[in-house]
Length: 441
Ligand code: NCD
Ligand code: ZN
Ligand code: ZN
Ligand code: ZN
Image 1 (cartoon, rainbow, N blue to C red):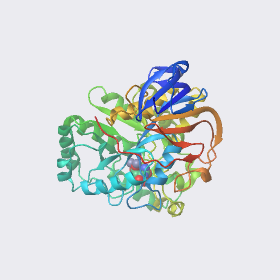
Image 2 (cartoon, protein in one colour; image 1 turned 180 degrees about the vertical axis):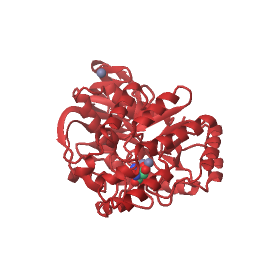
Image 3 (cartoon, rainbow, N blue to C red; image 1 turned 45 degrees about the horizontal axis):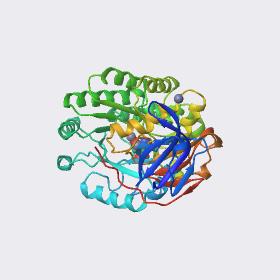
Image 4 (cartoon, rainbow, N blue to C red; image 1 turned 90 degrees about the vertical axis):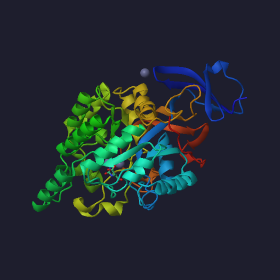
């Protein structure tokens, strides 16, 4: 007898939506069947005609542990993810200590394994000093992350030769490189100039990191990765210039790209409403850039949407625009924002699944995840496309306690999240079943 069946579901498959049921055994999807043909089972979930998606994979989160557990920890972060329909997260290395040595990676592994309710993987950080660690790395990580510009943490690479050498090492090992692509010197120059001019208004932050900063660094990363034959994934693409670059080079080299919900749904003008709470790297852009990102999604230049969930406490946002922390939370609102677009008919549910499950699994080579298919992990997100709700800071699971989308009225909501056949989120509650580290193909 199977462990669990899900009946009366609208199952979102890569090439269409089918009505039926899912048979689950040993945490895996055993088969799909018509609801009338389902076998008996110990446990039954009636999806009541709701859509069932493959559990989402958020490829870019900052769960802050070790080092800054006052902002977020693996329990609050993973609970926030689960409540947002996310079954797997890939955590970034800019923690304290940073994930730049095997020892520090082990330390983070121990924390995640004891606290995370969702499955997880780790991006390993490149630093100015850790070429030896990169050389001895035998896989087991989602990517090696290169911070080409200044942002939260202390991981900025300050010489392109270190980046180039690293890319060649990774190419040999078949490991993916990911980048925070912003030009550090340009940022420094513009920032000093604006500060000298006495600019203190929040929008000055966007001006201190204009689109050319991101585009120039992305261009360099694409060039160096191309020369090195290294697979490259551009994190948080935010400008029309980057979309053009990706379009131009994706046919001749292994290049993928990510956009965040905040760059897709917010814009420069939101600094007026959100003040320092809109501060994030790269900064919010104008309408044209935002439109280019949506177009990038349509034409396939943008492969995935990831949250860049970067929680910071309100107190660190009350220090003026230059000294406030940068980054916005986003694991809980990513899927609802996209479902709302599906309801507005600007996006199909199949496309949402490609952007948030199928493609992340492919790019980061995560084993047995990202699809509803025989033999895959039974990571499933049940969504009610008709539920209307308002995003409210006080309802969030993230420890930072706020969202730039507070007050947004949305239609479409995750109602249940399953990881390997176990319900970890349901009706506002988290079921604390330990998550596991993903494997890579
Ligand atoms: C991120 C953070 O706070 O960790 N901040 C941000 O503005 N996005 C780091 C990053 O992804 O650049
Ligand atoms: Zn970044
Ligand atoms: Zn980030
Ligand atoms: Zn459809």
